[in-house]
Image (cartoon, rainbow, N blue to C red):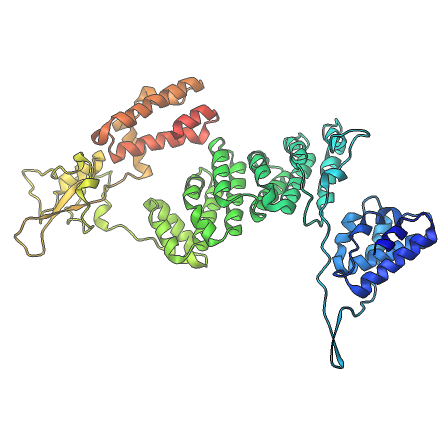
Amino acid sequence: QSALEAGIRSKAPKTCAAALKASAEALLECGAAAFDASPHLKQLPALLQHRDKSVRDAAAALVGAVRHWLGDGIFSQLKGVPEDRLTALREAPLPPTKKHLLQRQGSSAAVVAPPPMAMPPLDLLAKLPRSKGSKEPADAWETQTLSDKWSERKAAADLVASLLEGQSSLKPADHGLVLRPLKRLYQDANVNVAASAIKATGSLARVLGPGFRSLAQQAAPALVKRGADKKAVVAEAVRGCLAALSTGSCLALAEAAELALAAMSRSTNTQLRSTAARWLAAAVSAADAEGVGRALDALDAPLQLLEEDATAEVRALGLEAAAAVGRKLPSEAAVAWVCRMPPKRAERVGKALGGGSGGGAAAAAPPKRPSGEAASLKAPAAAPARAPSAAPARPASMTAPSQVRPPARQASQPSVGGGRSSGAAADGAKKGGAPRREKASSGGGGGAGEERWREPDLPSSDDLPPALESEDLPPAAVRSAMADASWSARAQALGEVAAQAAGGGADALSPLRAELLLWQLGALLAKEKNEQVAARALE
């Protein structure tokens, strides 16, 4: 084989043509497992354009032999060959297959198919243009990405994508030298340039796979940010590239969830959040059940943010992503995940799961609360007397001091069966008071009642606006400062909110008051663009 390589390098056309012909026959006769044709691939583009016809024909024969084992991926190696010549090679019939690697057993012969010939790793940096005499790799290509002409910038990005087409591996190198200029082009004013750069990044991620992880962490935030663009050519490129980061194992599911949450916390743009939702759904689909289980904590915050978005489209995409999570999980794990959600969210996700299939479909109907716990916040006087809750006793060590007070009673309306009177129950629900213990009659009758834990009633979203006026929390002046145009004023207001939340104690910060604070903080985060203020709100 070394002699054939030397013959192909010969300047004598007859010698070169003979070596090419012999190499093609050897590859067809012996198979790719026995004859390695990869050293010849670098010389084929020049030989296909040789001045001697016999050399050109012999080179075409070798291309056909390599194509027999490698497939059409050989054409990605033939850079610089005229397009009409490549078209003729693609349309040419494959050479006839010959029997090879025969194993003789008696009088019968068995044909053993050789493994397909693996493509050699591509040296991407060496393929990109370099200035004459320069020691810096791909410096001429990087200069082209800075050109004033958009067509040249687009050609630079397209070159990377074309070089990576059909490749399965790359030679180890600092591929950040390629990503950094491409990342700069994400924000190009010309949408075609931006789309080409994003597609080239996706191709690089697919080939490098887990080796692209550190670069993917740099590229993902910029990609999600560009996902706010409504132009279809950019939006499709961004979605494809983000999906490649997950399907190529460049980013773990938890990492994707954290990056998506960070991007959505800084912007309320509907298109950006739609892009993030589709990315999370693609990342969940690419992960296995174990990976989804490990990422549940990281997924909760971005999914809930999507499900509560002001836009119906984003909410629907968020529910689809949540349903994809439930279907990936085993049934028991999916039920446990849905049951730990707030009731309204559990109901939404359960309905979304009910329409699908998979291991988690059993979580479609989350357990409902007992009717006795659904006290109305709007009409406290009409609340009926309720029987004691049947929930299991809660250890005293888990109960705040304010939660062990005996239930209030009205003199004119004594309690029935050890439970609270209707007036006391409704009054506690209206004020959002701390959870209390109730006495339930023991099974033997006549004995002392047993204290049992009752889950406090939480206000619904419809009850928050009127409750805000009555509770005045945060105070009106603080709420006004939270909406101030100055970021420093907003940050100072959040400091006052933090002091109220930390110093109020269990009596002052009832479930209703806590819900009011969280509601105001969520509204601020939804439109906050200053990172320091957003960080203060998250704290």
